[in-house]
Amino acid sequence: MKAIIYTVLALVAFAGNSLLARMALADGSIDPWNFTSIRLFSGAICLGVILLIQQKRFATKHTVITQERGSWRSGMSLLVYALCFSIAYVELDTGTGALILFSAVQLTMIGWGIFNKERFSMVQWLAFFVALAGFVYLMLPSAAVPSLLPALLMTLSGIAWGIYSIRGKSCEAPFKATSYNFARSIVALPVLMIIGFMAVSQISWQGVLLACVSGSVASGVGYSIWYIALPLLKSSQAAVVQLCVPVLAAIAGVIFLGEALTVQFVIASAVILGAVLVFLMAKSAPTH
Image (tube, helix red, strand yellow):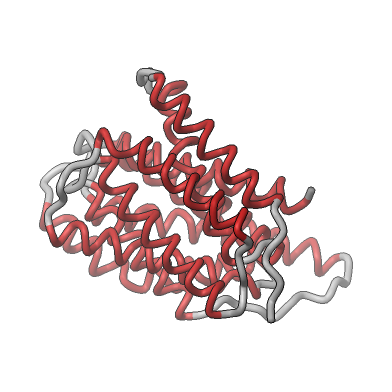
């Protein structure tokens, strides 16, 4: 039950991030460079405050505080994911970007799981391909043939997110590790902001606000919750459940942005969610 709750909360945060990025970047309220800078900085500040409160509370209770402090690999993976995603997002259609991003995530995380002796049963393989087919069916109408550079950047973003997720499986202190990872990711902040201010002449307050919410709540807190869920999941499970994110993001778009609810969306959502549920409930193949 604990794994289900934290996983669902993390997926909702991911969907929120997708919605916020769409609102901020699609209409040009802010450029990708400054969006990424503000997103990472606000995430680092939010988590830093939470970490200070947490450590102070532990100190008064004489609780042993773990020495885990994330890693530079995780911090740089987070930076690459966030920056490449934002740059590629404005150049790709929603469907195309989602197809490339989540395909890269699936290949990275499932590939790592198989490398580490995770084995799928026939039922799991079938459920995975059905979920993937539902995902393609959902995103394909808005997809188009992408330009090479944005496609490569979105692929790199998906691989970086896959690596960041994989590294979270051994995490013992999620909020602390995520806080230090965000702190490391902002080492490139001066360069990003310089490029951002050179690239654009104006940034709206709406774009800044959306980037702050994306960084502090959907990314900072959301990624910490994801790091709580990851040790409770296999790499393949953590990969497959993320196919639900576009469904949740589309539902949020219908509720908050007044986007149309189509028959195709209902069918694809039912297929994806059902197949993911079957995958999670099915037993893995025995390891020889």
